[in-house]
Image (tube, rainbow over all chains, first blue to last red; front, side, top):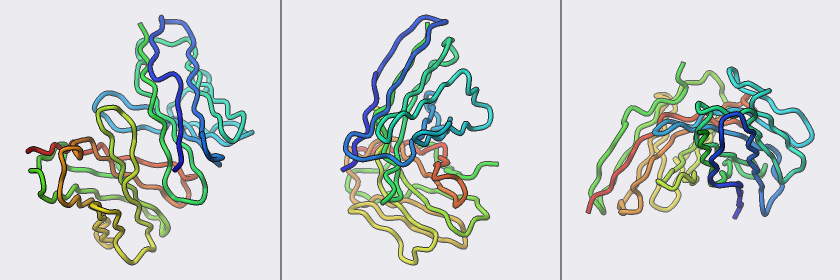
Length: 115
Length: 115
């Protein structure tokens, strides 16, 4: 199967600090990776689309200076929440596209709590 | 405008019975894909089933089938022989032809399977 990991699974930080979340495709090369955000009891909202070696494409309303995305290789994308505030507390999920099948493969998610 | 509509916030079904989760979509693209994902309380997103807009047959995967009615723009998920482990949130999602493979999710339906 296609496995996507995320690290860390849970993080608690103080307001004003930056937090980096890693998303890795473990057994395949991901043509594209995606970052979603999910508030409690709500749906997944796409934040950005990330292709290896190029700048991420952000959805309308998502601050690219706040949510820095780096896609350094075909198996790794990182999301850095800069100067985090309590309103950034959320569940962040990444997914990866393999290219030979239509579905995306999701990581287990990262729960961010900003105090 | 909402592209994916799931009108059932919550559903109950008795174990071993079948249940239908509704999903309607809105797109002007001729080429698109429809997906169903399951999200248990752990938060992971589990791919269930996919239907392409040009597929003439309804998709089936084990106990899951997708009732695709293109003219009505509906893509309902049918779960047969429900099991207690089917209790989870279910999300319908669409990928449009020009979306760069990003998924647009509905608000989800919470399914509870009772003994």
